[in-house]
Image 1 (tube, rainbow, N blue to C red):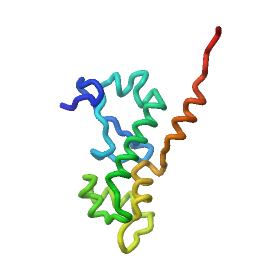
Image 2 (cartoon, rainbow, N blue to C red):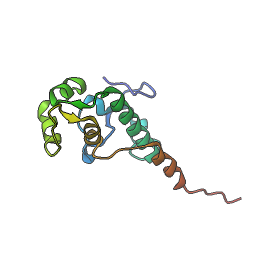
Image 3 (tube, rainbow, N blue to C red):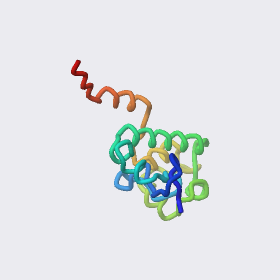
Image 4 (cartoon, rainbow, N blue to C red):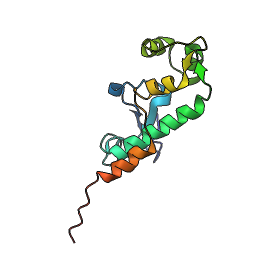
Length: 134
């Protein structure tokens, strides 16, 4: 049984980079959340800020983990726990150098072919309506 990473209640799997966005069904892309923290008002499915925070957290974790310039699929498979077949499918259209795939390409692909930054969170706050009727 999985426990929510926030409150410790019984949890479900949440794909940080959603599968429809190109995210993989692998341990590195999973966050365990209870129903309240998963699908509640402040959960990533209903709150864009939370979704962005989780994606930024994952991207930073990948950048820290993948600290070499190139990786072979074998090495990636062992580091991230992703099957070779899944990796081959995701990387088939990307340039393979003699040393392996470039780390920035790897992170781009694993993040659903999109990169995130803190500026996105700042701009997110600009679009929140301010209902100050005083």
